[in-house]
Length: 234
Image (tube, rainbow, N blue to C red; front, side, top):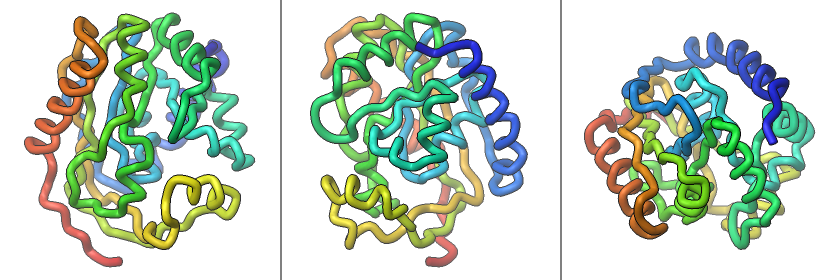
């Protein structure tokens, strides 16, 4: 369960990262009025390794991030996971009951839970002009169980460059279980992005209906705000 010290440490990290991030790229945030004052699920697309940092800087509130369980194998990341109250979940396969319970505990305290429903699928399909990848269903199950709103979000690139993706050796075996490493070559490096929030979706229907409504909202945001992307170099 997220503690006050974890929230304070998260905000300190956010305060430190924000100047670096805003120096690195032009960040525009649209739709903060849709952010709930209490618990909620921030559901966002995922196409770059700095997406959590971008959303964390864009959103003023504390976010407990759902992250891939194998990320705890990196020393610094393991420390950040513990200090900021992240929730570890398996990327593919059955979610452990303890992870689901931890996510529900975050929401029961009135906090925001940040989740990328595509998982790592979009990044590792390595086609950054493609539509959203298929969603995992876990976010919809959580929203129904906790009875909290889903806030659809999109990170919409306005200008970016494709660069070589370097995967730490400690993670390669874990990623290779689900993806062909030979096909994973590039990652976007943003020069300008919009972070756009849509109005909340309340859990008044079933899992499938929530997944469909969330994807439709995110597809609409993509159509409205996705800029003319300039892939400057590789």
